[in-house]
Image (cartoon, rainbow, N blue to C red; front, side):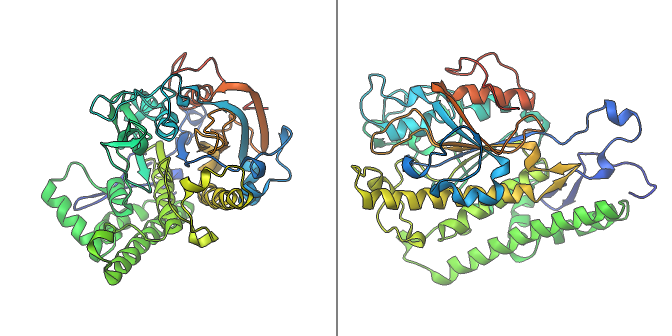
Length: 451
């Protein structure tokens, strides 16, 4: 940087109704011997991604434990990033099992994935499951960022009514739970998610409305132009380049949002089929736009905790882009029929491809002596293993990121049968500074995360 003073890690670029957070710059890091004592290291972040309806296990399982060498067909999109991935076998969510409650495995899978708790079987207002791991951690460390947590999704879903064999739609529609009876609704509209990242909560509602309207007509960067110029003058060459790259990323997302909104306006489908402005009709575009927003939130340290539902469990979405025109849930009841299993495999591979996109995005964001991915923990999977059997053991779980140098990736790790998935959550808490001796049905911390 220049010979000017250091700048605060909390520095933001301000405009009307806008507070544009910044990535970690060299100018924000301590100088001299004190820097080795004061840990101004990049923070460790975590994201929990969910996919529905189980997988085709024959094309998912890696095989023997050890280095990730040859990947099975469904995991093949991870080839270029496999050194950053842990494939995990043996984890279980016991409370997604009936345990005396009968049918309703999809609702339980969705509700239990992050809570590790048994959902009360009701389709009334007396819903109850448990606090999810993202909110448990946000209670302890969420105050360090402007947003304690961020909840993203692709399918909205209902918040009341009967969605699965007597289970409330609230269970099927929510991954994140603030408390046992309080779901955290996910944001499915990329425009609104983007505005949540960069809106200034201290501005009046009227100012925010004006800024929102302006954001449709011009870039958010126009609103902070003067602040950006003033900051650039204080930075050295490396920081200027990093800031320029970050601002270009913000603008790229804005352009995508504007393109989507123009397409929605131009197509004007019948009112009953219209998506809210800002939601792409193309599923892959929707997922990747949300992944880009997640990456920005991590890069600028707006939040360190994200839940991201790629679809609600029980989703019957079709996937014409990979030649699947039947509904996902319907196909998951495959009865071992090869044609249905082959289509499930294509869906599995499609979703893994989106996960690979997020991994690659975070890998490309440089910070300090590494990348945002090096300082992240991403959990991807489901609380159902085989959709036809509705089993909740031996779950298809993938993990990515280095956890701030505390996790060795590029491996397949096999845990004993019925190892609680909450043991993984307990292990992740340690790496972000949250403290607990137990979470839900955990029995201890996972071994073998670092070798």
